[in-house]
Image (cartoon, rainbow, N blue to C red; front, side, top):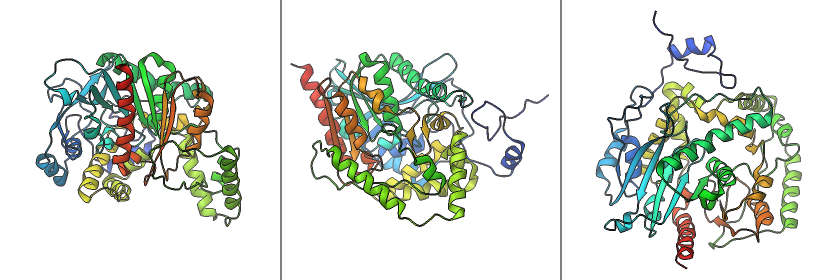
Length: 453
């Protein structure tokens, strides 16, 4: 008897099977997918940053994820025509005996290629949600020029081009158990990767979701972290008491806009100023017209899907042949990129979004609707034992005062810093790479100078 095909649309949260309607629907709504060996789109994107990348061996014995996805012609052209002089490797690093691996970009001591000694320090970069290591393509080249540093960038397990094990949520259990299970999934896979790579200590730089998980890693394994750099990290502040009620009533979050900064120096607001701004935002929100019934219904449906662990990538896969248009629309808003860069980044984002669903569904276990953590880091980071630096965009939707609160708790015990990158929002590493690279490279050089004393 033929084996039953894997469900196209699994119901996350209980480990159950897909609903019959979804399975029937998927027969008539095909979706693209990719193999782990189809690296042309990723290579095209990385080539734009000035990297000459050696892909993982095509003869690897790890099982393929899905049938091949046809590469975009424009992306392939970019890969073959771009000039590159910084050598990098793409590695699929095994982390267990079950075939799971962490997809890794490694740039190892390029600036001293003739020297056989190992670099003294390692920078490990971790990406945010709905992205992958390719989203740092505007940063690798400049960071690789810092002397005595190896640069590594990873795709989180179950994301990007890493392996896609089935993620089974514990949302039927207590909230603490649900959160702990999700956090352990990522933190322990990062530790397994570190051991396999033979990295004793690292400067851990995480963006958004990656910042949240990097912070948790530093809390559990402080002896392995030389410095923690949190780039617009989610999950730090407490949610306002009425936030979820406001969302269900159709009110979006009232975001404060921060004036752009012209300096690469830490900037702080007083607690009085912050409180006044929050109160003003709350007062302004209350003056809004009452949302329509349709808007309330849409917000309520979105929150229910979130609680059931449905992720944005599920929407993209469900869109089938329209999925690329959704990604093109999203990346098309990145006007700070050239048209060629947007095309390459869109092709890459589409490819990694169309791979089988996995740990992306853990976001609902970690965050409440509205991107507030179920277990906020603001108090948990009070015990952090490593130097900690925060970076935010000047127009970031993530509130930089969360970083300020942490700094007030740990200042005097460990070195700290907070930087706001001008002319940038949440994707500050993409929007203003020159300033972002300058700040991060400065933190790396500071470590190097301290180690020579």
